[in-house]
Length: 114
Image (cartoon, rainbow, N blue to C red):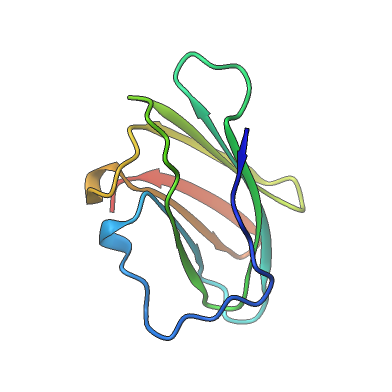
Protein backbone atom coordinates (compact mmCIF):
# COMPACT_ATOMS: atom_id res chain seq x y z
CA UNK A 1 0.00 0.00 0.00
CA UNK A 2 1.28 3.44 -0.94
CA UNK A 3 0.37 6.61 0.88
CA UNK A 4 0.14 10.15 -0.38
CA UNK A 5 2.08 12.84 1.38
CA UNK A 6 -0.29 15.40 2.81
CA UNK A 7 1.48 18.47 4.18
CA UNK A 8 -0.89 20.28 6.52
CA UNK A 9 -0.23 23.79 5.16
CA UNK A 10 1.04 23.21 1.63
CA UNK A 11 1.03 26.50 -0.30
CA UNK A 12 0.88 26.89 -4.07
CA UNK A 13 2.71 29.79 -5.66
CA UNK A 14 0.58 29.45 -8.76
CA UNK A 15 -2.73 27.83 -9.66
CA UNK A 16 -2.25 24.08 -10.28
CA UNK A 17 -2.87 22.76 -13.79
CA UNK A 18 -5.87 20.45 -13.46
CA UNK A 19 -5.62 19.48 -17.14
CA UNK A 20 -2.50 17.36 -16.53
CA UNK A 21 -3.26 15.73 -13.17
CA UNK A 22 -4.51 12.24 -12.35
CA UNK A 23 -6.57 13.34 -9.34
CA UNK A 24 -7.87 16.83 -8.59
CA UNK A 25 -9.29 17.81 -5.18
CA UNK A 26 -11.24 21.07 -5.10
CA UNK A 27 -12.91 22.82 -2.18
CA UNK A 28 -15.63 25.06 -3.60
CA UNK A 29 -16.58 26.29 -0.13
CA UNK A 30 -15.01 29.68 0.62
CA UNK A 31 -16.14 29.69 4.25
CA UNK A 32 -14.69 26.44 5.65
CA UNK A 33 -11.95 23.86 5.13
CA UNK A 34 -12.64 20.16 4.52
CA UNK A 35 -10.79 16.99 5.44
CA UNK A 36 -11.24 14.24 2.86
CA UNK A 37 -10.05 10.62 2.97
CA UNK A 38 -9.13 9.26 -0.44
CA UNK A 39 -8.87 5.58 -1.43
CA UNK A 40 -7.72 4.27 -4.81
CA UNK A 41 -8.35 0.63 -5.62
CA UNK A 42 -7.02 -1.02 -8.78
CA UNK A 43 -9.12 -3.24 -11.03
CA UNK A 44 -9.75 -6.63 -9.46
CA UNK A 45 -8.36 -5.68 -6.05
CA UNK A 46 -10.42 -5.78 -2.87
CA UNK A 47 -7.93 -3.68 -0.89
CA UNK A 48 -7.13 -0.02 -1.61
CA UNK A 49 -3.64 0.33 -3.08
CA UNK A 50 -3.32 4.00 -2.24
CA UNK A 51 -4.88 5.98 0.59
CA UNK A 52 -4.46 9.47 1.93
CA UNK A 53 -6.09 12.12 4.09
CA UNK A 54 -6.07 15.70 2.85
CA UNK A 55 -7.06 18.99 4.45
CA UNK A 56 -8.19 21.52 1.87
CA UNK A 57 -8.40 25.15 2.90
CA UNK A 58 -11.22 27.39 1.76
CA UNK A 59 -11.23 27.53 -2.07
CA UNK A 60 -8.12 25.34 -2.36
CA UNK A 61 -7.36 23.14 -5.37
CA UNK A 62 -4.85 20.31 -5.02
CA UNK A 63 -3.55 18.14 -7.87
CA UNK A 64 -2.14 14.67 -7.25
CA UNK A 65 -0.20 12.01 -9.14
CA UNK A 66 -0.98 8.39 -8.26
CA UNK A 67 1.24 5.99 -10.21
CA UNK A 68 -1.76 3.67 -10.57
CA UNK A 69 -1.28 1.35 -13.55
CA UNK A 70 -4.71 -0.33 -13.64
CA UNK A 71 -6.99 0.15 -16.63
CA UNK A 72 -9.84 0.80 -14.17
CA UNK A 73 -9.27 2.43 -10.80
CA UNK A 74 -11.98 3.02 -8.22
CA UNK A 75 -11.57 6.39 -6.50
CA UNK A 76 -13.55 6.84 -3.28
CA UNK A 77 -13.65 10.13 -1.36
CA UNK A 78 -15.13 10.38 2.16
CA UNK A 79 -15.65 13.43 4.36
CA UNK A 80 -15.43 13.41 8.16
CA UNK A 81 -19.25 13.55 8.24
CA UNK A 82 -19.43 10.21 6.43
CA UNK A 83 -20.59 11.72 3.13
CA UNK A 84 -18.86 9.84 0.31
CA UNK A 85 -18.84 9.28 -3.43
CA UNK A 86 -17.01 7.01 -5.88
CA UNK A 87 -15.95 7.13 -9.53
CA UNK A 88 -14.32 4.39 -11.62
CA UNK A 89 -12.08 4.75 -14.66
CA UNK A 90 -8.55 4.86 -15.99
CA UNK A 91 -6.27 7.42 -14.32
CA UNK A 92 -3.63 9.29 -16.29
CA UNK A 93 -2.51 12.86 -16.93
CA UNK A 94 -4.93 13.14 -19.87
CA UNK A 95 -7.95 15.36 -19.05
CA UNK A 96 -10.46 12.61 -19.85
CA UNK A 97 -8.69 10.27 -17.39
CA UNK A 98 -8.64 12.66 -14.43
CA UNK A 99 -10.62 11.88 -11.27
CA UNK A 100 -12.16 15.09 -9.94
CA UNK A 101 -13.26 15.29 -6.29
CA UNK A 102 -15.32 18.39 -5.51
CA UNK A 103 -16.19 19.49 -1.97
CA UNK A 104 -18.70 22.06 -0.77
CA UNK A 105 -21.89 22.60 1.22
CA UNK A 106 -21.07 19.52 3.29
CA UNK A 107 -21.08 17.13 0.34
CA UNK A 108 -18.50 15.40 -1.85
CA UNK A 109 -18.94 14.65 -5.55
CA UNK A 110 -16.58 12.56 -7.69
CA UNK A 111 -16.50 12.61 -11.49
CA UNK A 112 -14.20 11.24 -14.16
CA UNK A 113 -12.76 13.64 -16.73
CA UNK A 114 -12.11 17.36 -16.70
